[in-house]
Length: 226
Image 1 (spheres, helix red, strand yellow):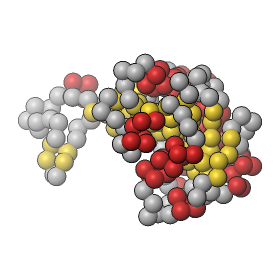
Image 2 (cartoon, one colour):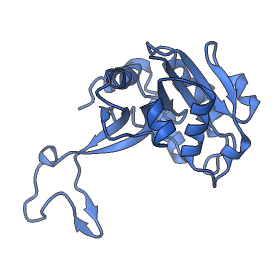
Image 3 (cartoon, rainbow, N blue to C red):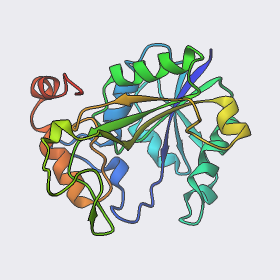
Image 4 (spheres, one colour):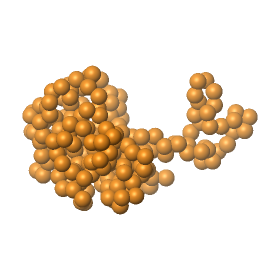
């Protein structure tokens, strides 16, 4: 099954301008992290960066292709589903692996789990999630616990939060139903560090601090997902 990974990139980010190519304190641009990880993932038939600005090509390592997209897809009024369907129309594949430069710490093993699940045919999609067992409130009221009976957090019913770092879906799902998540979705539970997602300057500072732990320490802290 032809499997294509792609990283959609906007150069006109509003909350943190230029975040996708912004450099960490070690001088390495953010986008390089996810691209180097994708190059390690087995079973990919191609890796693309989907961006309207050819300037991004300066930041692409060998083995990663550039595909120019319509500037219309950069507008704040454009739905993200339009970006996904546009890419699928331009690059044919059976399975698409969507990820973002702003999720620099997702491990190749997590991608591998999701790809294998969808390729099995049992699932039509997969996504990265972070398991949460916390005291949650909605509309000013406890949601998953009773205040008069305070449980241990590990005994709370777990919830799973999308990390926005990895989505894997079939061609039929995105082209026919215009969705990246289907009715048969495989959840890939990732660590808190893998779930790091950069939206603003505070997120970037936090991610840079995580990076300074070094590769060995990051491996130690991200070895377990539960």
